Length: 365
Image 1 (cartoon, helix red, strand yellow):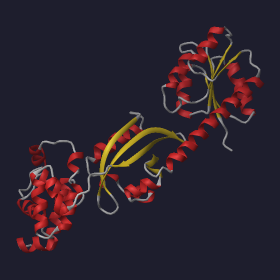
Image 2 (image 1 turned 90 degrees about the horizontal axis):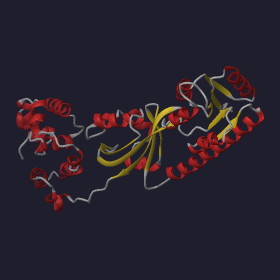
Image 3 (image 1 turned 30 degrees about the horizontal axis):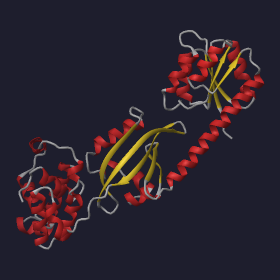
Image 4 (image 1 turned 45 degrees about the vertical axis):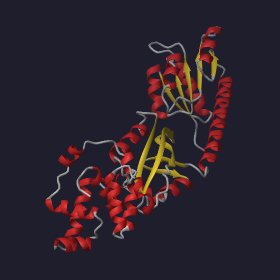
């Protein structure tokens, strides 16, 4: 069984050593600090299971140490016992008012100290177990996807998360998330990392990504910073965003832009409903992306004359074979140009390439 870790903060070294030796003999792992600033540093470094702290210390007293640690997410819930030679009623009131778990006066009776430590650790363990049960209930919620991310990988995902993404945990961990996120992957991953690093406590995002079956999926993600086994982690929920069902032939007129209506009508009229459905699948991408100046994008993305020709034909629904025949070039050449277009526009498939090209006026339909 893993030893419970106790941090002792006291500027009186003989007492510091006495308490540390006693608790070590009782089976605890102890850390000691000779002032408040060192105590805060060691609390952050070692994440103890309980803290014992003297009140009357130079530079930073015990009350200041407590208030500082309370603001640090990784240690704010650690049981805290004040230890002091002062026994005035006012000190008791202050200590309990700010939220300390106990208040023990000197001279110490080690048995009383040990009893208080065991009582506080047992209570903290009960609270943790209650939270664990509550999490188990949440984990099996059939309506919400749940995930935990730590050590640069998905540590846990529930069945609903798998259903929404269609990826297993192992598949997700083998993927580069940048390659499946459609809407501004770098920005989204940077925001999630800021929460993982505890720069921000939580975040809410709308994300569009390509699922295992190469379809665009739209989700709302809420993620919060937590500490698991002393490691920075994210815990989050995932909800699928459902749009109104769209029939290719009857509902293509419902598009918000004339460009999309024209392209879908054209594809349907030429019997290319499969490609039209792909366009329908990504039409909502526009609502996820931030408005960007088209002229700046066109200045940034330079296409050759041949690439423009091929992009135009792709958007009109022609296959690689048809494009090759029309332009008197090989299928391999068309493949190479298509790959270059995906790379230059940072899109992941033909559907998102078409959506990008139409939105940013690279083609005329």
